[in-house]
Amino acid sequence: MKTAVALLLLLFCACVAQAAPPDLWPLAAKAPADLKSETAALISTPIPGELKPAAQFQKLFLKILATTASKVQMIEPTWVNELRPFIAADREKDPIAHGLAEVARAWLARAQMRQIDVLLHQYYRENVRFPEQFAIVESSVPEALRLDPWGQPWAYKAHAPQGLEKLTGQRYQLGPAHLPDLGPCHTPAALPGWSLAVRHLGDKRVLEIRTGSTTATLQPGGKTGVYTLLYLEDRWALLAGPDQLFAVTF
Image (cartoon, rainbow, N blue to C red; front, side):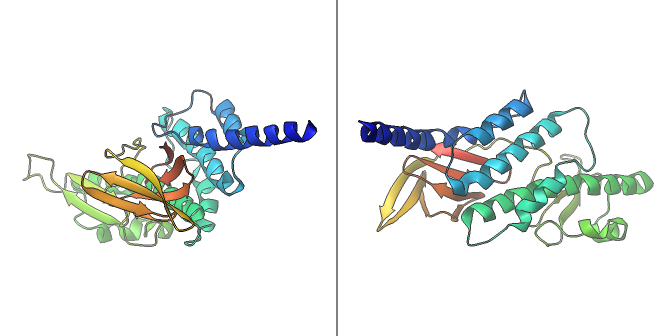
């Protein structure tokens, strides 16, 4: 009898562990109404050990969303330093650690872009146009911000407003070389009509992603477009995009 109860308990715990994790990383993430209670619930959910760093990152991500939704916007948000341990833990052969580091770099880039924006607007006030090249203002940019979080020169371009081509230098676009179109704030993930399925190749699971006539087959660490597969189970997967982690079920 005790053995049967123990087996049922183990089965129940296994089911909880399989069913609960996808709810931790929603696709349509938004600023939490109660940051403290939502992060407490996040950390208390039973998950596989290798996913604990991903749960910790989601806790930070909720903090980022709460901060960016606030009317009080700081030039260097308090969460910037909390990104750095995820970047420092980057190991390219560890899909989860590498994926977390990449998302952390994207958010660090956003914070740094905000700081650089202040300097670009200072140049604008003095010259009534933005600089043609980033090199023109680079000497006034703190050394720590002269390269993007991937260690590459920033992708910068001055341009005219749409439809007003003669007004050159009245707009600018700045982003990391790795993601030149990275926006300044969170944009919930929008998957491009994916059809998902798990396949087995020998003793390995792979995620098959179909989009129209295109098929991508990914193991953890593999990429399709801007999305990286971090973790795969038979019924769900955890992916990372430039903004967030998100789970998909199938």
